[in-house]
Amino acid sequence: MIGQTSEQNTTVEAISNVEEDSFYTAIGDVLSNHWDPLGIFDTEYPHDRYSNCVSLIYSYAIKSKTKGQLADYLGHLASSLFGSETNIYNDKRAAGLIVVIRDFYFDNNPCTASGV
Image 1: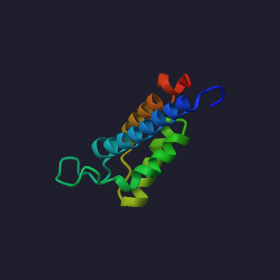
Image 2: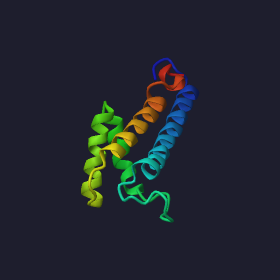
Image 3: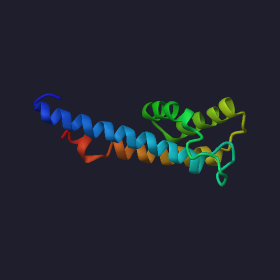
């Protein structure tokens, strides 16, 4: 970044990496606990059962502007990857949570917003 020392740049990069990792982890939690197109919330299946979707959803969530766009994408993934019928309630609920978390980490975080 312009006008920053290499130490400040390293700090910003470290904060960004933590935020990306935290957002990635949070998506996995939302998928397992609020989306769950396979309908196995309360079973002994591994907590990371949707880990194959996290990177897809992460990329889409960063680009999408609205909860509705993300909810539509979640519905598409549910049907194309798992062959399950779309549950629009779960899609919207999970999308809403992911958007709030995304905005916290990338739009409203004082460290990244101020360029510290």
